[in-house]
Length: 367
Image (cartoon, rainbow, N blue to C red; front, side, top):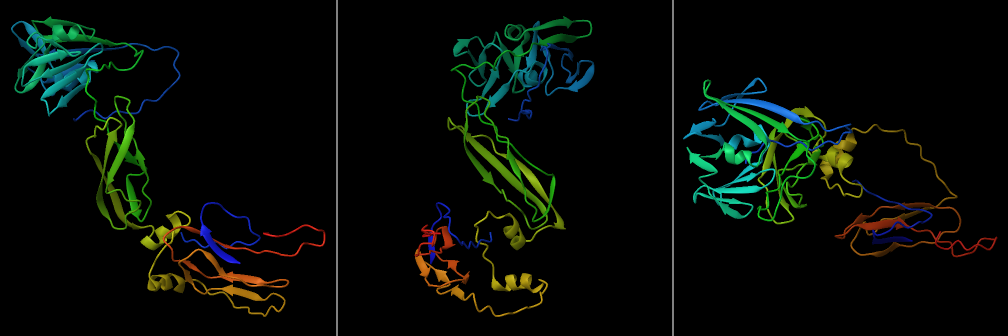
């Protein structure tokens, strides 16, 4: 009996035939856990010359986005350089024109347009903490020092700020409280190679994460292809949404395809499509591939003791059920040639049933 039925479980017949051709922020590295005997504090010494973007960090020259300033006897540090010199996260909210600073012990939101400061949700004096020059936020050093532990002194003779920062080992997570907005998740991905040949599989690794620890609820790819069959640069983008509904900025990178053959579209489907995938191709293309197959010598012989039972009509079936039934007494050869014409995956099988018990009394039904 030949039958087609839903592909839910594999039967165990005696014979089975199965046919298948089948803002801008520095990039963050995922933390790596290592065994250490003891966490050691890290210190960094810095020299900032007032009004000069040239600075020195641990004796090495460094270029700043904006200079440290001295105004009315106060020292001001640009908020833009806090992540690099003190490890303090700084974000810009364009919708509210607010600079968001996550300090070790507090969350500060500087509303530039309104000139307001909210610290952990409570209003504080903006003027006592910061100032704005050239559309940049500068934070007073004495206010900053209340929340970030460092040692600083002003060298009036050399007209510079000398700062020593000791970064203690982190005992817990980054400061967070309910007054902080939901941070955007970070969309990021990488590929397993820098360049690919024509038709070579491209493997992507999704490295997206959420700074708040929320789960990534949705990922949206643009231009993601499993393989590309023409040379050039191809842009691939990823955007993710966290469990709070906040959408990330779009992350993009180019995938380079060199003009070196690997697989054409037909070969790629044969080698890399999942088992059970139907590779549909024009007859002309199929014949082109079959034409180059070496011919084997033909040895034909008639087998009289094994009659051939063939099932091929209808070749394309559109309904479930028995396609063909036949009876045979003794040995036989079974051959089936059918195409699934339905819109679902089906299990196609040849089922052999012996209606008579064996001489030893064991029933071989549904063998």
